[in-house]
Length: 118
Length: 110
Image (cartoon, rainbow over all chains, first blue to last red; front, side, top):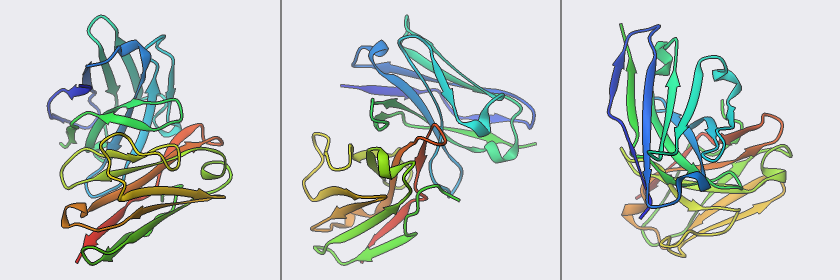
């Protein structure tokens, strides 16, 4: 069965960086892209960007350009998301999700809480 | 402020039917497929509907999706208390080159 298992919760200070990983299993990793979606406390879903697990091509949300880097490691079927220069409003649960060609997400990770606080 | 507009909340009695609307524009819903997600409290979103009206395996036919012009609708029949959740619509926005979501609708089963 398809599973996406994310790394654990993080607490960071403003200005620091965080890296969240997402290990995939149950399917051929390079066949599907991975998107990252975040959800601030009590708020809705925000798409952060997408990475092709086949060739590493990326597409980042405009408001995160310059602070965000997504990578994949096909040898371990793992996708990662690094967000730099963290601010308090980056506090959120971060999800990885398997993306399909018509821009929907059929499997999601369990979520990783990132707290940014001084 | 979300690109797609959903009502903040809807409610209905057990066994009844409810619809949740999702309004957008020609750059998103009007020319792209819509998906719907259910998020139970403190859990990850779950895919309910994709490509406007298709259900993944395991999703009961009580859940349905439709699209007309620049709006989409999620329908849920035979409401159960376990359906209480937040529901989100999503689609691709060709102008933004980004996936966009609605603000979410909280369903209460009275």
